[in-house]
Image (cartoon, helix red, strand yellow):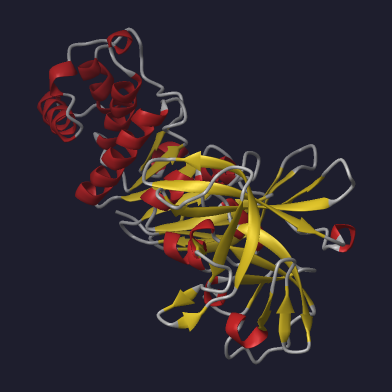
Length: 392
């Protein structure tokens, strides 16, 4: 196992492109750490710098406190698993697993023992004499992971290893990778653009955007307390909905209702900007029989009425796509990451998604009454996009 520290890492390419900006990270010993972000955000570049395939423009990579920035990849005791498997088609599974050990000139008995151990760990025993053409995508990916495991590295690096698999296999492989990491207790650095992979796999997650780390935390911290609008909109499916808001006196005014500011930001002592963006997760809506009847343990909840434009019925739950008429959308903050549409009459409409129970009475084109809990709202500065206040 190994502890990895990245100190002031920046990367600029010859054409002037800035891939990473002043990145500082600490990856703990035995941790499964995720780098997540959209394509082009710099996560794969960061992985290549850690393993030694690319040199940083500034900064240091430390392994257990020792600088390795100027060491060759072969001298860093790291193993990388790529998106494209990178296994030899003319070799059997056994030969593929043994290949890196033969290059290292290990004793044949040691090679056989390590190959057998990896095969048992990854349930590849019955497949050892097959060639890659006779394997499924998931089996090939397990062979690629086995080639890394037999080396017994201090750090595993996985670069979008599940991208080539279909949805069902991705789900299975996520479980296998998590179990494998727990059994090996080896430090893993995992890169993905899929926030579902990040949230289900990671002990901690770093969210990147345009080469800058936006937030580092546990999946729960990212979901419940996003540091800014980008993290709030990137993490979660369906995505968080956003509303423009303004403070008028002691009230927080949104398009379909207004709330006492003290219920949304209880105990907040720092000055609050006048113009805000309010975020709400789809599951924090609740359908009520009457717009006046929403309660939480006897405590009245604010309610509003919206038209159901579309329903996604998913068996255990349904997602209601809501249409809310609004005015003054042209004056809303430009940073507002939400969907505004305009009808034939020139009226603006706001789109939100509510996640409700599958037996909730709802029909497309009809009105529905919904409540929301003010304590579950996330509030952001409309100018900077940064979070206002503490966790909900």
